[in-house]
Length: 329
Image (tube, rainbow, N blue to C red; front, side, top):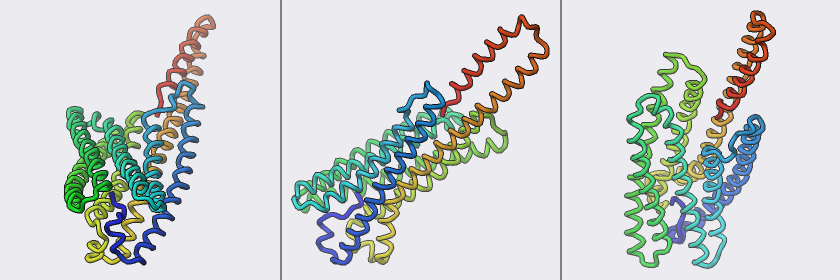
């Protein structure tokens, strides 16, 4: 967990500690405000979807991911802020553990979401590779749970040797986990790129256009999340800022903190943008299908006898209902 611990904040300059505390305070409450705004945007999108389709399930996998990812990212920062303002060691440790759980829960959700969003493209290109992506994600998530346990041991450790050994193990597992996530994201990104190339070459219908949108936003998601992981990994490896500042100056350390704290907000806006774009494309496609049906009805009216019209109207009505229900985000 790339947050300051008592072990190094007590040994570092008071000016830096005050700078860090001010940065974290501002960004924690910026995150709270932006998270509330993002939840409101999500609510608006869900309301529009459900109002246009009465059979629409509100708590879809995507909606639940967005809600929980916003909440866990926000709580990871807020719990640290609460912990800094407590005097008791036990209370501080409790808030810090809650922050650790929230932080890794956010990472867990993003990896799972990336797999679920990438599977349609993977299935469309090379269906047999699907199982390898699933196995890789299982390994990543297992290591993530291990990181949670090691981080909690570090927080509760009263012996310096236990803390130091746990920190070394944490750095090793964190490096392995970050490397596997990078490989996983890069593999999914490659499939997105291949799919975009295939679509530009072959053209697309509605379902292909949907996967095309997923691919475009998938590329943006990859970039933002990798930036987040890179800064988090850097801050984790350099537990004491003196180590990092022996290579870079204080402004780099502060920049890494900014990026780590705020990049998840950018990631969520990318996902909300993708959800809105998919919904808009669905509406466009439904409207296009309805226009085609109306044109077909006009042509049919010119050739059918009156006695046949009711049968045709019933068939068309069934087709219209099928179109509305089938095009869901």
